[in-house]
Structures are given as C-alpha cells and as structure tokens.
Amino acid sequence: MPKSTVEPKPFIKWAGGKTQLLPQLARLFPERFEGYHEPFVGSAAVFFHLYNMKQRGELKASMRRMSLTDSNDELVNCYRAVRDGVESVIGWLEEHKQNHGPKYYYAVRAQNPRNMGDTERAARLIYLNKTCYNGLYRVNRKGQFNVPIGRYKNPSIFNADELRAASRALDGVTIEAADFRDVLKRARKNDFVYFDPPYYPLSKTASFTSYTEHPFGKFEHESLALVARALSEKGCKVMVNNSWTDFTRRLYFGFKRVELKASRSINSKAGKRGKISEMVVVNAR
Ligand SMILES: C[S@@+](CC[C@H](N)C(=O)[O-])C[C@H]1O[C@@H](n2cnc3c(N)ncnc32)[C@H](O)[C@@H]1O
Image (cartoon, rainbow, N blue to C red; front, side, top):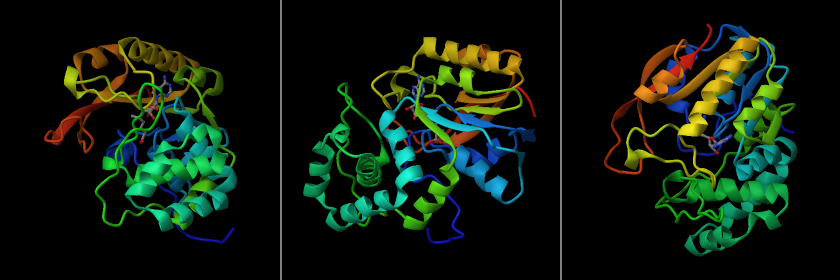
C-alpha cells in the first residue's frame, strides 16, 4: 500500500453527520479512556476525529479495543470492505467515475446490492451517496435505495488516498451490523462509548428516521437512556447526542446535559436550515 500523510475522514455523507459539531463535542470528550465504541456509526466522523487526535499524540487513550456498529448493513458492509479490500473498492469506484451520468446512475441504483461481492457493493453505496440528491441515504419499505440523481456538475466521488487512510484507521476495529443494545456486551470499564442516535423529533414534521427500514421511536430513546445508565454504572465513559427537548432532557436526568447550537443542512423542509439546539450528555470528564 503506498505511504501517504493524508488523514482519514468521513467518505460518505450521512444525515446527522457530526463533522460541524466536532469542535464543540471535542471539549467534552473524556480526558483518558481505553477502548472506544460507536454503536450508531453513520459517517464515523467522531471515530476518525479521535483516531487523528491519537495519531497526533493529543489523546490519552489506548484504543486497543474498538467497535463501530450500526443497524444499517449496507453501511456496515462498506466499512468492512474499505478495511479489508480498499484497492478493490477503489477499482470499482474508478469504473463508476468513468461512466457517471443519469442513465448509468439509475442503472446502478436499480441493482440489488445483495447479489454483489462486498467491495462492489461498498463502491455502489459510495458512488450513489456522492452523486444522489442532497447526499441523502434513504430506503423505501423494501429496503431499496430510492433517492434521485443529484444536480452536481462534477461530483467528487472519492479520493483514493483518503480511502486508503480510512482503511488503515479501520484496521483491527470490530465492524458489525448490530442493534445499539449490543454495546453492553462489548464495552468494559474505562471504555468510551459515543452514541449518536437518530434524533427525537423537535416536531412531528421535522423527523428524519428512515436510515433503515425501522423507525427510531420513543421506546428506543428510553431503551438507549437505560443502556447509557447501565454503562455508566459499569464504569464506562458515556456521551450521547440528541435533540434538546423536555423529553430528552428528562431521560438523562442525573447526567451532565449541555446545549449545543448546530446548523443542520439536511432537513425535511428545505427552507428550515437555521441554527437549532442539540443536546450532548456526558457522565464523566
Ligand atoms: C444520527 S445517525 C449517526 C450519525 C453519525 N454520528 C455521523 O457522524 O455521521 C444515526 C445512525 O443510527 C443508525 N440506527 C438506527 N437505528 C439503530 C439501532 N436500533 N441500532 C443501531 N443503529 C441504529 C442509523 O442507521 C444511522 O446510521
């Protein structure tokens, strides 16, 4: 693998991506920890950020035990394929880049990813994600990706060196399709667990919960708060993001709850893109 000094960063766009909140979140990361677990991995923005901090010697963390999980198996396959077969993923992406156009996009969209090899399937996700409308990953009830082509003139579909850097960062990391509750089996004392669930909606129309076929409702939020409490009692360092509402504040009673301001770019109402309050919850610093 060619050597490069490129730092890894998210290579897919994900609704709720945490890149812009990172400076605010970073102030609340635990000062030291051992393993790291991210049960709603999405674009892995926090993982890559922590990894880069560690490489620069800015983090007191062993990070020997790490897991990145999500219930979206398309996404999970993508991380595994980048970890285990990055050159093959790059090869498939070169092909997509050369052929990109409306006809080609819809032909790729119509393919069934379950009939593909892992690296071809990963490249399909990255290609569609970078060329589709608004970079939004959305599936219908049957689990089929159904977003139309985006209006980009020259979409930058991938950067080979960044993918290689991501592959190195993912080396040795457990990557699995799993429900968030599974982290109870993985996390040990002094590990850091970062949760970024689909947010509890601020209003009935503001919800975006179709990352997978299963919506994330009130019951799931209550379960998540119980998981956070159980981990906290085990001696783990926990951080949870959510919307800033009466319901979510009450769920994390006893934790430190901080209000953050974020400007959200993916919203069901295109006009509503102002700053909104978000919540971050921590049990330790
Ligand atoms: C807000 S996104 C995470 C965003 C991520 N932190 C980032 O920076 O891109 C929420 C993620 O939760 C996943 N998800 C939804 N329900 C889940 C469940 N029950 N267990 C695990 N993951 C779930 C979705 O597939 C989605 O990737």
